[in-house]
Length: 97
Image 1 (spheres, rainbow, N blue to C red):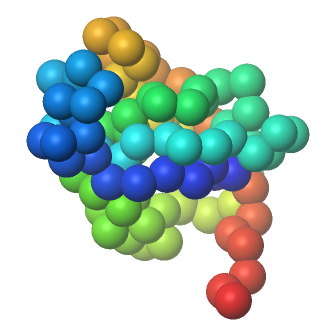
Image 2 (image 1 turned 180 degrees about the vertical axis):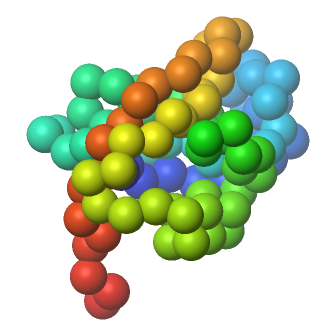
């Protein structure tokens, strides 16, 4: 997806003024990557293709088990106080290091 981030928690939600305490918060979006121009820093991914994403484990598992590079997926994010759907064309998975 060309993003980095971290799991949401109650403490982080309180810190940033969000009512969402689950999901995966985006920290960076790779310029020119699959999510560039679609997802934003501080977006909170809460679903992929309608499947709940509670944390990084859910995100990584869903991508590994249900997607392939170039597939277009519906990513549901919380942006501020609004739920937004973005269609993302997945890139190739980075090699394991």
